[in-house]
Image (cartoon, rainbow, N blue to C red; front, side):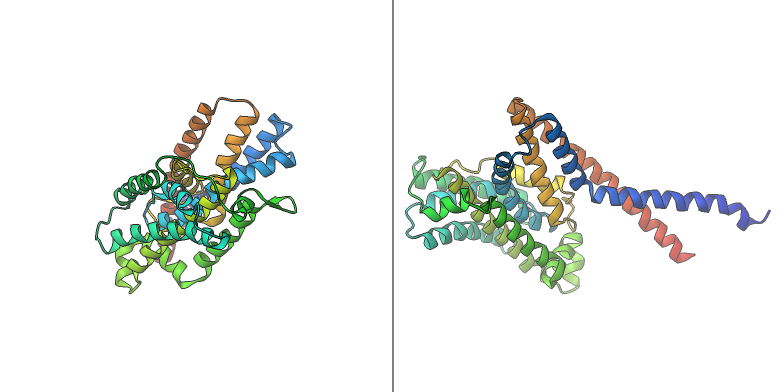
Length: 340
């Protein structure tokens, strides 16, 4: 028997293993959507109220806050960063917007506050040379929340214009306005990431920052832009939160930053950067919403919601490890094939 014949069984087994790895990788990439589908089916079977129009609208309102923040967080995490200040921005933007004037002016204050905080985060990271986004945005979290408490004297404020209430609680043909806004921003961000040079730069900076700089990519400008956009989206999310309650509280948005980060990680993005998709992030935000909504319908203690979401985060991180191993295996196999 020739040597080439002896190698056939091994080659066939290796090819089969590669095909299984590729199939598993595709399954992991579609994982967030599959998890969302399973959760929706389970909630439908366990509660007759889940698929009612009223409950789905309520789910849309609740998930919209997290989805907007998660879209901004996605941009930051793709570049190997994180923004812990977005929840505090929700509180500060609200109290600053009360009494700002007409509807258009109020909306500009909301958005402008978020943009200013995001720009400050990016400026400290890039021009301040404090290249630790966790520490920088943790500091911003405290500063922004403190300013919100000082400005409002720790009190909830009222007196927002009707446009804020409309954006937070209105519907168009039965579809919540916040859901329409999230869909619009998702389309824009998806197009920017997938069809523009700027989007390719974001992935390049996250994949290998030093190589991106050597290739002439304006990495500093990319970082400032993603943190600015993350802050801007937090300001928009503040409009929805304030509109939902028809008030502005300095404590609004507490822990929403954790929900946003969780949605991004459940959606398959990596803290190592260079990876993340808008559709999966939206699925991650809906997964959080469905878990909370479903457990509420089943009259389960909210304490279990924290446990369920925490378990899901750990599972998502483990799936990320498995995906990395599968990708490495396929890359190695492709390299061997090229050498053959």
